[in-house]
Length: 143
Image (cartoon, rainbow, N blue to C red; front, side, top):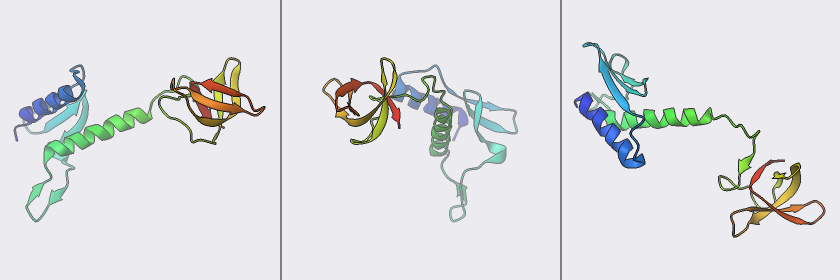
């Protein structure tokens, strides 16, 4: 496959998925070594081809799915480096605890100890405080 065509297909796939062309795959070569990159980070190098080699057909695994997997692995790795500026608070819309879990929720005066009861019609978490009263919240963390 022509590597320029491959990069064009990969960028088109990104556009189809996200309608965004700010971040892109690119191809470069010095005439001896070919590189496929995403935003300057090397995903594949012809000199050190780390695709699986199939001896029965005497060929490497297809390059496009390989590059897509490397891209997904890169994005997952970047996501794991996310800086949590809110000191570990989790938005209830992003992830909810299990009913009955002991949690802290973000109250007006800081962390409030409670038991998670569920989610209300407004997508707010519902908590039962230790005194038996019920409150709603939008951010929580494990206790």
